[in-house]
Length: 410
Image (cartoon, rainbow, N blue to C red):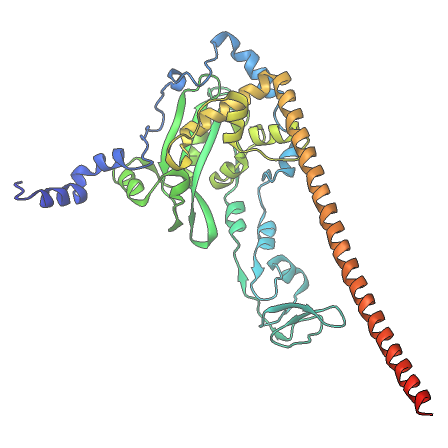
């Protein structure tokens, strides 16, 4: 093909599929795609730890001792039970009156609602006022026989949940992996996985690092977070470099692990939810560090990497997340927490002192504000009292003058 001007050549390069690979590699936030099952070794990056084979069992024992009990997982929002049909019915609520579908069938309730919006005010009986009726009774001002049940975003998450397959003696799976996902928002307010990365906890070898095609239409790509733009993603799909939805991503992960595998992550509950996974053997760096400090604060991964490792992390423009770098950093943070208990305790004590100091400063600030408010109110009261006294004294003086004038007239 012959191009007569530089402008036509540039237009061809910008729009021709033949040059799309170059655009992918040069685009901001672009990332290499590693086919499922490929093994690479990021230990060449000296920022991260390499664990000798002789220490694997010891490292596994340390990690196993930190697996969170069911109580802690539930407290941190993990979904550990498959929802029954009746449970899912509780998540379907009437858009108008708020009754869930299970209550409707158990009590045969009619739909009783206010078509107007809440004013935020209450009447003399304590009931909230609505724009439709002004001064309503306890129940709605309109009724109908049928409810307008709607599926909630949480219902979609709960309906896809499945347990990690049990351990099979003939199959060899990884004993501990580190997982991270990047997400986009889709229609209905749902989050879907768009990148999934998994590494072996002991070696750091990459087990899975690929794009995932959302099943629903994307409404927010969150490109500022992970750098994935529609052009970059569509280019990967055209080259068959993306898995077909969250279910395919989950199957790819299940090819690597079983129910005895320890899954490591940072706030990994969010990753498990978008993958529809129920897993009980969890070590979460966010939970580990929050509980170490008494449960007062949560710490971001970048803060933990800086505090524990003092290394450069997310140094690209805008602090864009690289999913693979995040899993490697999470591995490093958990290695620190499990191998260096003394240092972790010292760090936690500093964070507790910072928290207590902040609480004390806020208390002092509140007391000063209250004291200033009290002084201001006192000055206002004193000013009103002085004003009233002045008026009263002024009236008395006028009376005395009038009285004196009357006496003089006599």
